[in-house]
Image (cartoon, rainbow over all chains, first blue to last red; front, side, top):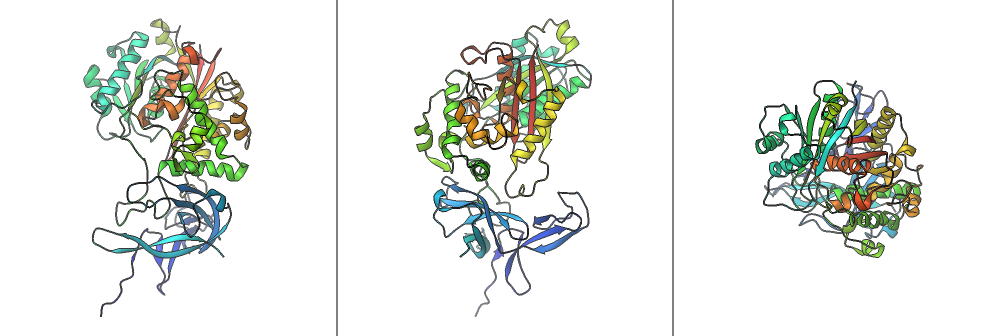
Length: 139
Length: 380
């Protein structure tokens, strides 16, 4: 019997917690309080060094902006919704908004969304699987 | 410090020249700009050359191999869509600083067709289309929809930008396309990234443009003041921090800062400007830059395009060249091509698209990453 290997995170700011649950990783400046997506050493807002603390970003947020992509590179399924989400508690992340009709009339600014973690559906050259994050409308 | 003047400038007709090279295209515009003021490469004290696609390949030196290897210093610049304007500004700074009296600035680009941008792929798997989209049409679609979010700007209002600029292009023989596109044709064209249809995206083309810059003393000595245009301001900015910038590039803050710096340097305001060539890489972008450049109050850009005030003959004509939407957008050439356009109007030589009585003109480019350049030019 083989042990299942957890898929690799598709981006550096997607991490696994000790209990194996995936989450979006951020950092927060101890001086000005700004929250960033991913790790960093220096605050891009105030320039302070050595004050950045790791922060687990929220799995809920609001849709700030979007576009419906109808033309993309060969092999990328279209249409899809490219969304900008303000996570509750800080951090703005871009990702695909799924489980919604790609129709501007069906998509509302500020609609609540949830972050879900699923297989990326793409493998690298060595055949490794990857974990990605997506947004879905919050019920 | 001396005032700096554009004494010669020209651009080639933008198009697709797969059989020619970047150096060849750059050389053509350089010679045209030299001919425009009757000077030779032997008169030039430095060359500032903007090109993005071959930024590591000494494009300026290769231009000189075609038009004269005089041994002058060459500075090659790359700054996304602000590449050409950055080369122009470097030349301006050198003359301002008193280092040189007369320099040549060239912008040139040879481009493939198709989508630009897209995210990821260096290691692991490509993230384009998986974690949202980073293509230029998608990024600038969101620039527009952010305006919709704040102010209710409509798809139709964005589309009107293309109707206007494509109409302007019919008066410009150097534009890649010179074709009227009625509103329904623009709105019903293939949707690329909502709300930008294919006719609301700029065209990837090959092109080049050049300008000869001169100090006041030298321009007088050479008898070139008659058609000279004064550079009243040159501003270049990088993107100041804003909270969503890393997920959604903020082209507004970087433009507002450049506009403010340029207006301050010139001692002028938006009401003093007679024509503008701004960065309409997508129709949505023109709308937000109306406000970023101060042509109207925040929230009124939709009304401004509706009013017709930014069309030729209106209160403040914008992109009478046809803009990037129809003239084409050869990245490294664009920033100098819009200097050429404004200079041509200030000289009163723009023919059928002449903005009557133009005395002050403004050029704007913004490159993703980000870099924004604003220049203000004045009729002498």
